[in-house]
Length: 236
Image 1 (cartoon, helix red, strand yellow):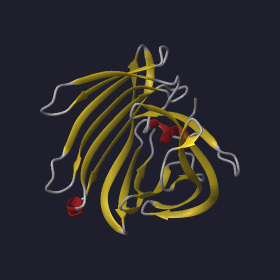
Image 2: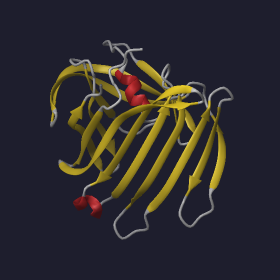
Image 3: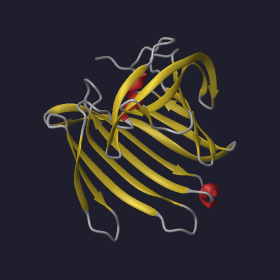
């Protein structure tokens, strides 16, 4: 099926907090990989905070998602986290997840320096996406005013719904340029219960075939965070 993204795509994002640059992140589409004799899409992301931001928070993270091509159902996921505050003990952890959609199970392996390896199994809702692949799923949707879109997602041992409500169509200027975009209000639900605190909005370009994610704005404990497209290279 034709998608707005292709292998080789690379999007670099700038993270700002209180109007100051806090770090950068890159999201890539890597070449397809075979898993269980089926070619899967491969999404990869890495992010790190800037040097000056270390007084508030320091983080370096890497994610990789191996995703089914027909429904973005996640098959394998890897996460490497190294984060914390200056002068405090960092949180360091590597996590591997294997997804068995047929049996609705997730097998999780966690390695933390200085601790015993943990292995656990959790319930999975069939066809659930992951936190990285769901971004690409949203880029394939044709949003219409007043028509909400929902995606089933699995993260942190929970199955939940991401609801994307197209609240506006507008021009957005970011370091990578000016785009016509749909503004989505994002909300997370477990069952019928709204989970998140604070508003999160995402803007997806509507005027280019690639339809990149242009920016995200979210409210967190320490204030408003913006993630804006800094550089973009489309895939082939």
